[in-house]
Image (cartoon, rainbow, N blue to C red; front, side, top):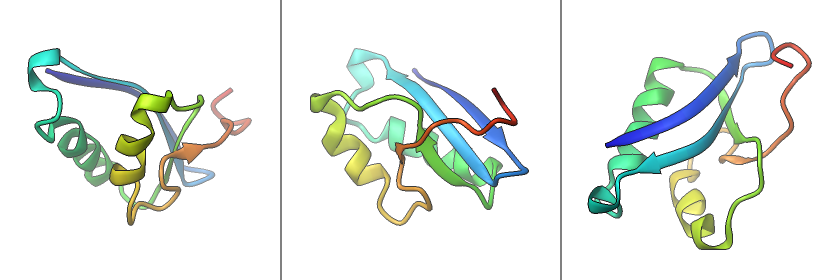
Amino acid sequence: MFAVDYQVCRRCQRGWVEQPYTLLEYQRCGLASAGLAALRQEQPGLAWHTLGGHFAESKAFWDVVGVGVPGGYRQHPPCAHIG
């Protein structure tokens, strides 16, 4: 139902998410928000970012799920440790 690619660097205390995907029939039900929250809970203490730019239609999503999240899911290049 929901999937997301992610990488973490404990050395830099950063995590990156990319290409979140929710099946069409489950979109706008809070599943992606819950999935990202679960990921943050599994990987505590990280600032969260994305690798790529956000599509115009997804900007509102990232703005909402980034509230109160260190890093705010803003675009940030990967560190040299995860190359």
